[in-house]
Amino acid sequence: RILQRTQFTDMYVEKYKGIGVTLDMFSHALHGNYTNFGVFELYSDNSLSKSMALALQMCLAIPLQELNAHLKALKPYYYFLELATRSHMPKVVELEPVMLTTLMQSVEEGLLSFETSVSMQCCAAVDNVVSFFHQQAAKKSRSTSEQERVLRFMSEAPRCLQNILNVMLQLVMTGTFSSTWSISRPLLGLVLLQPDYFMQLKEQLVQTQIEERRPKLRDCFNDLMSGVENSLCTKNKDHFTRNLYNFAQTVRTLS
Image (cartoon, rainbow, N blue to C red; front, side, top):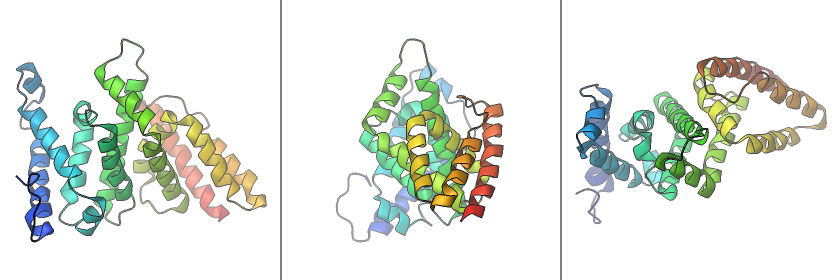
C-alpha cells in the first residue's frame, strides 16, 4: 500500500519510516537462518521471490536525497541490500539496468557515509555484486539468463561500476576509509572486471600530480598489481590486500 499511495501529508512519517521498519524486519528474516531458502524454488513456492521483488521496489521508491536526509531511520536499506546481494543476486539482476544502476548509485553514496556501519555494508554489497558479475562473466559453458543479464548491465551501464571504482580508489588514496581490508575486497573485483578503465584511471590520477611525483605514483600503481592474478580466490584477495595496504601508506607520503 505504501508503494501505491501518491499523496502524503508527512513523507517521512507516512512512507519512509514504514519502509525502513519493513526492510528491517525482512532483513532479520533473511539473516536469521530460520529456513532453507532453497526449498522455496524446489516446491515452486514464489513467496520468497515476490517478497524480495517487493523489498527491492521499496528501495527504489526512496530518492537518494531522501535516503541521505533520513539515514538514521533508513539504515535497514543498506543492511537489506547487503543481504540481498550476498545470497539472492539472481533476483537482484532481474531488475532492469536503470533500476540496478539506481541501487548501485545509492551504494556509491553510502561508501562516503560518516556512519561506519553504512559504509561497511556498502563495501560488502559492492563485493557481493562484483563477485557475482566476475563469476558470470568468466563462465565458459552455455550462457544462462543470469549471465545474459550481467553482460547486458555491463554493456548498458558501464559508468556505474566505473564510478564506484573511482570513489573507492580515492578513498584509499586519501586515507578517508577506515578499513583497508574491507575496501580491498570489492576494489579487486572492480579492477578485474574493468582492467582497461583501471589503466585509464591510473593515468588520470598520475597526471594530476606535479611532474616530480608522477613516476613515484606510477610505480605505486605497478606495485599494487604486482603478483595479482585474474581471480577472486581468497589467496589472491589476501595478496591484493597486502599490496593495497602498502600502496595506501606510500601514496599518502607523496601528498
